[in-house]
Structures are given as C-alpha cells and as structure tokens.
Picture 1: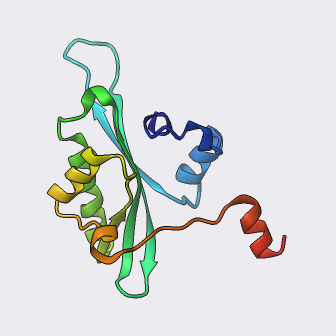
Picture 2 (picture 1 turned 90 degrees about the vertical axis):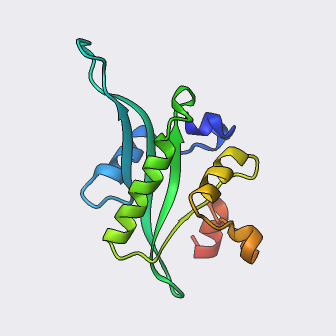
Picture 3 (picture 1 turned 135 degrees about the vertical axis):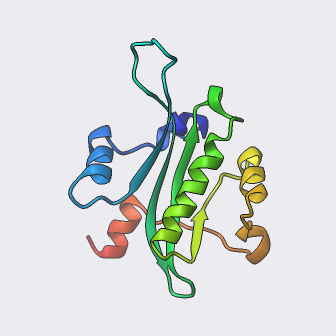
Length: 148
C-alpha cells in the first residue's frame, strides 16, 4: 500500500518472503512497529494492522548513533487520528533507549501533509536548513563500482 500511495509501485523489487526474512530472521536488517486497532467488543476478529513504521540504526561520524525511519505508513481511513504521531514518538523512545543522538527520516517533496506533521513534532528540514541532498547507487551501477 505504501508504494501505491507514493506512486512508486513499479520500483518495488523485493519479495514478501525476503522482506519477512530481512526483518524477522536471525539477524534482522530492520525493526518494525505496527499500529493495530482492536476489534469492537463481541467481534470475533483479531486486531487489525492499520499502520507501521520500519526503522534501523545507522552511524554518523559527527553525531554518533542514529536511528533512521525508513517507512511510516497509516492506512488512509485511519489518518488524522494521531497514529502516525504515536509511531514517530515510539521510534524516538527506541532511539533514546539505544543511545541515539538523532532520528532521521526522508519524505517525498509532494507529501506536504507529512512534512507539516514532522515539523509540528519538531523535526528540522535538512534540505532547507543545511542543503543536504540524498543519493542512491543501485543495481548495475553498484556492480560496476564493485567490479562485479
């Protein structure tokens, strides 16, 4: 759903099995928080996942331990209820518990609602404030760089 929301479904290259193994295997590459809605009293269904946050740890030679929120997603019908804010606050709690000095995330330039939320919660826009741009190497370019 996140890739569809971001209009980037054509860029998804990982299988569900690999995603599961990478996050829930013996040596996870990432950690995941889920937001659930409990069923109404008397309903037979179990909790329903309505959002998630995927994060991992990186390191800054200037700031030390850092947590990076790779993805945050809340189903459209549950937005505006504070679920995204709760996920972000929980990631901040994990960061502090792990001794991180900062919490980073990126947002697409068209997602003004998300940018407004992050700023309202106290985040600084590093593109505006410091001029940082993010780059990516992948696929054939990575193989060429690695000589493979």
